Length: 228
Image (cartoon, rainbow, N blue to C red; front, side, top):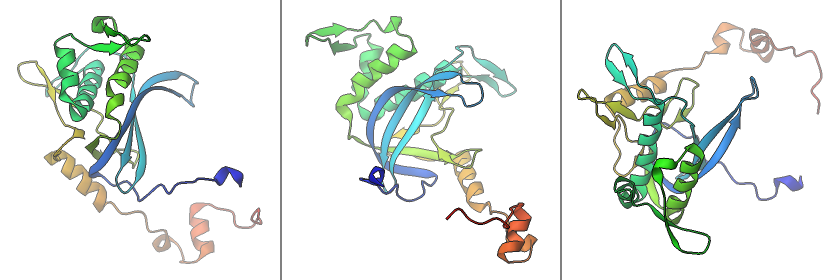
């Protein structure tokens, strides 16, 4: 029971839509596959969502920089989706971060407190995430808005494909998931409405409305004693 000391209320169910939140930082992380034990590097975005509490979203390390083709045209690569997502985070906190990158003038403090210019062309995923953590650390506590949409697993999360390619082949933003004065696209609104109109299976209508009847419908054996 000592481990329950300091427990926090997780808050209400995190619904789809646009929420007020506070930025809690970017960190380098990893996720281990339960299927085969593979380890995947991630960038973890931590937020404090109003009315809910702590919320994290993992951006996986991109594995391809190649664009794909579909019947509707060219699709952004995994690298482009990641970079557009990261840029949205920078812009939401302070557009000056993005301007430093655009001007190839990213300067941070070294261990001795001296200014050091970063060679952004020499960054791999791990170095980029660590640099992003340094650049955004001063903005922890900054108020932002985030957008969450229904996913196929039933949970609401940040849109996974924030980038798009326009007709001229230029990279752009398909949807902005973090920032200020966010809006929902027509397709996002339809996804939210569709999820809201979905109703769970009424087990009582498929069996007699008793504990034994519902348990039988679920295939649960109620013959054994509970462990407490």
